[in-house]
Image (cartoon, rainbow, N blue to C red; front, side, top):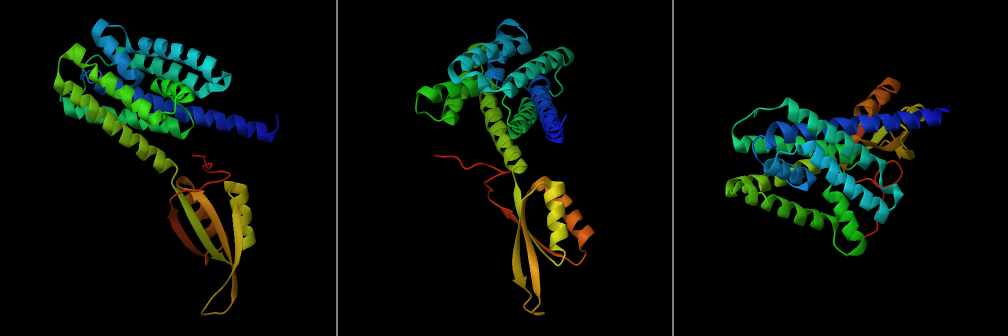
Length: 290
């Protein structure tokens, strides 16, 4: 097996491990806080929750069956390359929902608002983690992609409409404005947490390293961190001596490794770090056509 093949397999395993952890958090948010408090959020998880309260049918099974139908339709309409990560997420999340619903039989917190907040934070964090790895939990995302293929309506708007409809439907079961409002609170907090997780994971920094050991530092950044480097010529104003400037872009989680490489190579190096709004190109986000 080639080294490139090994690295690809390790990358896939790491991604699916992170996705599994995100699905675990999402399932805990629903089964430990939202479902016991009779709070209905958006998405297919919300539909499965409504089915559970109306009939007692397990949430995990409902979630799996509904998503199975949606995935089959999506494969027929969107193509076979629809996404193995989506199928994986649907199956694993269904298993977690079924497992935790059997284990957690009593409400952990009896106060409804606190259950809503904690459940939304956990569920939103889980979905955000899945999104950072290029995965999807299926559900209304699939419906949005199908509708978007045939109608010029943004997926975000479609998902919003569906979530509002699902949460509003909780009135038919609970006859409670309070529970319906809590559902909208859950939707708002969950959306905010998802954005927070995604933006945090994609946070990037532009780094300038002023050093006389530019070749060694650049070589280690390229080899150890697999990041691109640009070398620029500079001159100290006070010393009038020429100096090289190493310029690179790194993710937030890589900044400490970069500091270690620089200090191990040149303890006298001067480092400037700036947070950037976005980085587009190889190794980062791709520029998308509007």
